[in-house]
Image 1: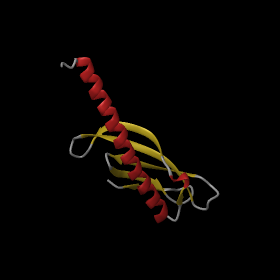
Image 2: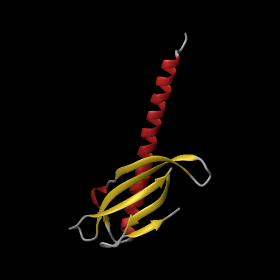
Image 3: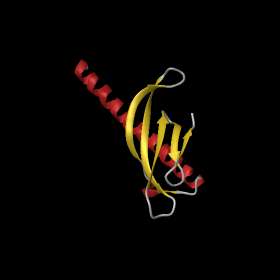
Image 4: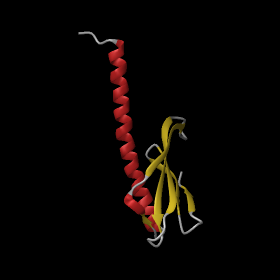
Length: 112
């Protein structure tokens, strides 16, 4: 039984797509936990208990390895009547930046 080059390329592409999807779900959960914890620490509430991806790109980490950097947007509130925009940036599975705070002047935390 012989596998053609096309079949091999299709298999590798499908495996990479599945890996990207599973890894993205894992990182998204970590980002939700970090955003929720930051909101609680600031006396805020994460709205809809969810985040939305706004950017995905390959970048080099401090070791020079290529990893995926994902940026997410989310909404939070300080009093339940308004929506304030927040953001979080993940480098691989690590939070490197988080933007959440009071009113119109949110705190930007660079975590890396």
